[in-house]
Every structure is written in structure tokens, then in C-alpha cells.
Image (tube, rainbow, N blue to C red; front, top):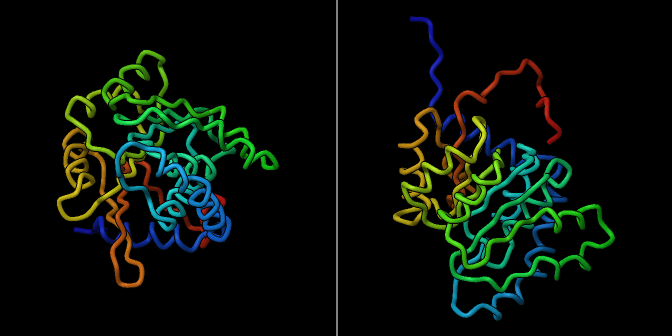
Length: 239
């Protein structure tokens, strides 16, 4: 039996090492800190307390968006827009449209950030964001289905349902990558991963990486079909 077996954890180790050692890391961290700074005051404007992603998570989202270079992104859980801006910055060259919803809030106006980015090419990002305020994921996904858009990257920072999984099959490409926040313990990210793995049987799970002996909270689900071997010592993508 001549076979080479690779576990999900082995693939995850290589993937996260590639992401963290990217030569874009400095730019990603700089953008993540800028985004954190400009979005922090928005916390006071929302009617109830909720959590937002850390600078390190924002940096990883930036780098993964750069790596996968999606044209269409779907995000579930906008909150103050930190994750949306991070991913948008990372893939601003490839991005065509960004759908994002928040089931609780409708007070976020992305146009308020335009002046901050006015000197950068990334200022065009704002016009690509389609924000669904006070809209639950099922409703947004149904609307995206009507539009006919197909996402190649989905970020989930909110609890999804079985109905959402069915709709995601209709609004994503066959090579779509899923990024899950709060993948730890009994948090929503773990529950979401279980639902998605039941719906998408050909996907593999890349669990959060370790940093300073602590496990992160971002996990990734990728279709096994997009894994490719290369003879090159460097990746055939600009990272």
C-alpha cells in the first residue's frame, strides 16, 4: 500500500506558517492597527456590548484575503466593520463585491471611513461593500441568491443555522473557503464548523494556529480539491 497520509493538523501547520511568514506581514499589521484605531470609537455608538476581533485576528484575515484573493466575499456578523475592512484591505485588488450583515445593528456607515483612506487605492473598497443592517444571515443569503452572486470566501462571526448551510450551497463557488471566528471550547465557531462539515463533506478543517503557546480563535474550512502540490520552493502566489 503505497500511500502518503497527511492529517488535517499537518496541513494546518503548513498553512498557518505560510500565512504568518508572508512578506506582507508588516503591511498587514500596519493596516490592522489603523483599522482598529478608526473603528474603536464606534463601540460607544452601539446600543449593547459585543466583542470585536483583535489586531492579530485582523492581521490574519488580511493575510488570508491576500492569499486566496477572492472576488466576492460574504460576511456574517459585521459589528463595527473591523473584519470587513481587514479582509477588504487584503484583497482590494481582486475584490468586486463584499456582502456583510449584522442581525442586531444598522448604525454602521462605511462611507465615514472614506476620508481615512482617501490617499490610498484602498479607498475604492468602500463602494464595494454591500451592508445589510439589522438583517439576519438567512435573509441576506436569500437576497444574495436572488442577485446570483457566488462567493469564493465566507467569514462567519455569528451563529448560523441548517437553513443557512443550504443557502450557502447556492451562493458560493465550488472552491469557496470558509473562515470561522471564535473556534474554541463551546463557542459558536465550533458549532458552526460542525454544521458546515455536515453540509460540505469534501472540506477539511484547519484549526487555529499557536502563537506564544496560545491557540488562536480563527479556523478555516477548505475544499480538499483546492490542495495542490508544487515543486517550487516558494509558493506560486504572491505572499
